[in-house]
Amino acid sequence: MPGQPLSFSLKGQVALVTGAAGALGRLACETFAQAGADIVLVGRHIDSLRAQADRLAAMGVRVLSVAADVTRSESVQAMVDQAISHFGRIDIVLNNAGTSSPKSLQELSDDDWHRIMDTSATGSFFVARAVAPSMIQAGYGRIISMGSILAVRGMAHRVAYSAAKAAVANLTRALAFELGPHGITVNALGPTVIVTDLNREMVLKQPELYDAVLKRTPIGRLGQPQDIAGPLLFLASPAAAFVTGQVLFVDGGYTAG
Ligand SMILES: NC(=O)c1ccc[n+]([C@@H]2O[C@H](COP(=O)([O-])OP(=O)(O)OC[C@H]3O[C@@H](n4cnc5c(N)ncnc54)[C@H](OP(=O)(O)O)[C@@H]3O)[C@@H](O)[C@H]2O)c1
Image 1 (tube, protein in one colour):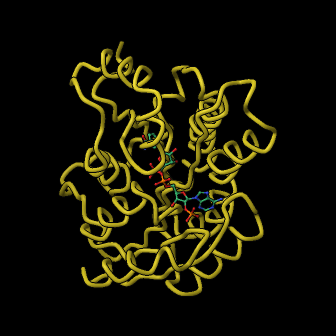
Image 2: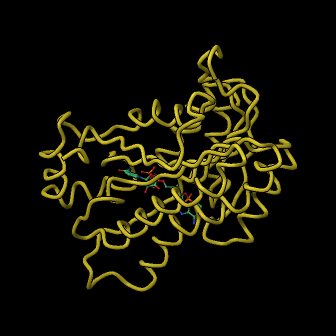
């Protein structure tokens, strides 16, 4: 609004992060906490969230850890209910849980396909559906999902992952229309290869695939977790009120080519 100061502060807000124990999940939680938000950590194993919860609490924010499997709607609903009953609100959601498998088409099993699609695409849908009522009631919300450059580019040995991330991108656009009238923005981040536990083994096993990404990246390097922080905070913040239905590529320019 004209005259209103630009705000990237999340003070007084509650941010929920799925896949919170993973590399980018940890980075996201720390980014939101640094901006002042209280944090709901979500993962399948509560033990894996403990160290992260202690670190965030030491930053002076309130923290709740909840075990949930994003591929199961009743688990997601119970997790969101617990978060709302604890904090009274959820302002920001990051659908970060995701998984991959570096297999060829012939090697990819039914289970691989369903696990990859269900974690990124179906999980993002389940979480958005579960948090929407409280955000609609509040007239405010920020829903962000982890997409990928593979939402808009293909790659061998990433068939299910590419399909899942394309689904996340268009889920984002459709939700933007549905939730925009309620003051809720819905966006995705589209990172390039960011070397983390998800892909470290794949980077080592298939250097030729990653070299091909590197050659087409104007900035001339793959990503680091810290590259996500600024774009994520922007989308989560009050400053991004007029940005919705977008995939913000964080890719050193890869998708510009
Ligand atoms: N790293 C990259 O290069 C890159 C690039 C583009 C996009 N991304 C996306 O960024 C997100 C995070 O990636 P990352 O590199 O940080 O991977 P990561 O370290 O493997 O973290 C993924 C997290 O997802 C959680 N998870 C998996 N299945 C789950 C389920 N069914 N329910 C709840 N949580 C589940 C895992 O936790 P538990 O196993 O403990 O439950 C883990 O903490 C993913 O969506 C990924 O696709 C990553």
